[in-house]
Length: 76
Image (cartoon, rainbow, N blue to C red; front, side):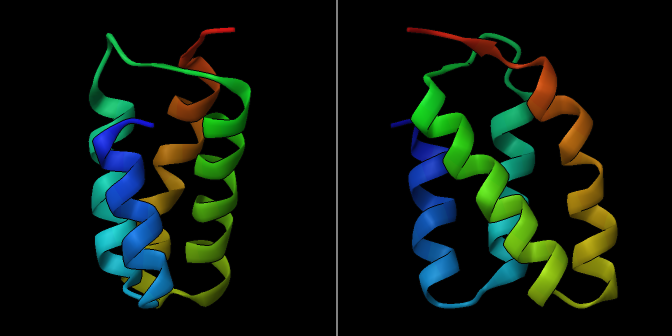
């Protein structure tokens, strides 16, 4: 699992939505990153959790992640 995704999972356990958003933004900004199906699913679930549980600013920031998640390359 990619370090940014691991860090986002850890931050979500602590309900630290700003950190989750930060790590997911780092994840999608890496144009060389390849995620397997399970990792992509985890990233999507974390993004949804921020949208549900975050404050307005966190939701605003994480909304920018969704389009980029769909463009990440997959590895099998």
